Length: 139
Image 1 (cartoon, rainbow, N blue to C red):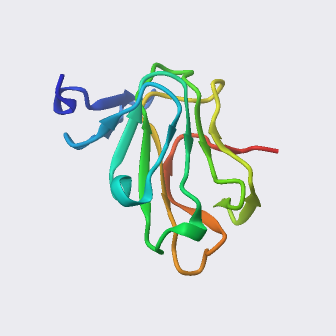
Image 2 (image 1 turned 60 degrees about the vertical axis):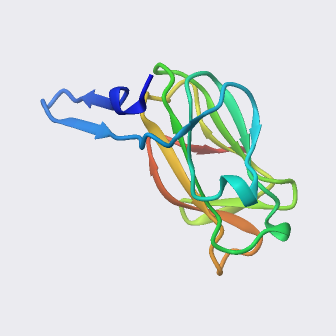
């Protein structure tokens, strides 16, 4: 099936609609996956079942790595982004070391996504560049 036919539209009570369009080069993963800096950088990935995504070790890769993960599972599908144990994720004005970013089962909606990058100012953590949905930091 082409993702062009699987775009997501969410209807809101106000009558407005919000669309998430996924490029037709996006890659589906069906089980836990470790993103690879040399071959996965710049790609969009998606899931339709609960998955843990592990980010590459920042110490081994160049600055500027970028990944997008889209949750295309039914509402309530867990999506977990896990940094390497040496790294963290900066989200909502703070960075946490070796803690996950989670689109929890209680809040996840089909079409939620996160874009993470390794930018020059963040040598020890990934930075959330864009997100849709409710994402929580692991405590």
